[in-house]
Length: 628
Image (cartoon, rainbow, N blue to C red):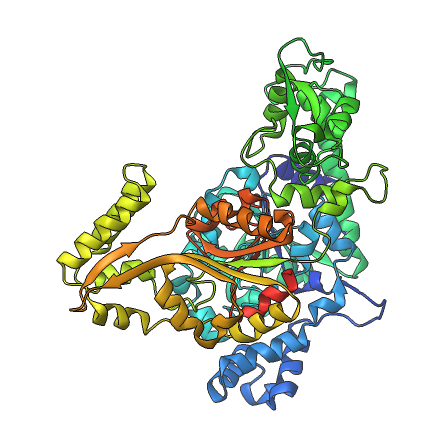
């Protein structure tokens, strides 16, 4: 196990947010079977054997090279068969994170990388949006406290983009953002490799080459807790790779060593904290936080208890901790979080407080929105559902307000169309392809959109100017049919609509697309749809475009449409599920409906106040049924 002195060195790096964790297969081995069985997840040698048996191969035929065998399976059959064999060999749903995963989650790593495919770290860290593929690295441009902590460097079981030898050889070429981030992190911070052995192919194919690339940039060692290396290997790694290796001889030593590190970190933080010596609590700037600021000496207002509870509890901040940060006493915070659920949604639900209290709490919590009641996002389904599911103060088992919230019965599903009910086939959207069909560039196609977004023209003017320009360029029925003929329905559309209808769930479509295209794509499935709100195109007797008629329910209008549907059904908007994929769908959440983002494009799918849930890669519409 690691020594106390060594643990203190790593603890200092943790406290400075300069220690990055790299997790290998040996840590997945520490997971607990959900039924208490002694079965364990496979290591690489066991995985190779299981995949070989599943596909009728023999590892010995490839000289024991797992990656060559994987490449051969993909070549002889197809990549899907290889992926399925690996998924069958790693039954992640049969296992829960173990003590080692919990200890990992309790420490403030600068970032956590893993080459494992299972979801154990995602669950242990509570990571809702782990970085899995190139497109996800944009999340690292968010403020530090909102960035994902976890990077699945080679993908997950749902999307194993790096699996065979060919994938590894082309990895840095196909994943330049991942490669650059890895080198940048490795240059700026120290890495602790956990759960790798010298025989681990990830260690040989990724870690050692990366360390070689980093050596010239770094002035200090990285670290590895490695499964039973020989003394000669330990000496070699230290001298050749600047890798300080500590041997793990028994499974129990993984958790024991992490316990030693955690104790060293807590001791160090306690020494640095003024609380240790009984001094006054300090705010981030070093100024003692004043107490008893809840007295209503200035103008009073109402505080949205749903939001206050969400931003405190979801970030695992205790009331006592928030009190130290804000100067508002813990008992007062508990009082302000209480929502009168017997009242209809409105000001009577929430507590009176001072503007000074709200300013202090917002400064300490830094929420993405105002905590003051009376804002456009007061009734977002996310805040209400989170409160309902997580509020732990004693209360009546049921009340009129709680009963009026979503209880498991979806009354209606409101769909966007393009990219939601259709397969994502094109880089451009339908309107961009319409403009390009008669010679306009994308910049020209989007100019009117920009003017509308900036408030320079109305939606009606946008439609009229679009018609004028397209007609002037000769846009006709043939162009329209050429564009619309290449749009295909999302697989599973018909069976999903049938399922919704069998449950008595109303189906509505609200989209910025064109009605004729929607009806063509739906074909006979349109009989299941209760209403379609979309734009329309008309052509004159010569087939030339004559008119574009817009509808009032795009962008911000989608929220109004959902409200209208709820009123027609006599239900709360939370009983409605909205499903979309893009920027013009983001306002739907302000209606109070539950929201699901599928195949996200140009939208902040990781912002929970916009999107309650997300399907990152939807290949069949039946995947939405689990969210009804």
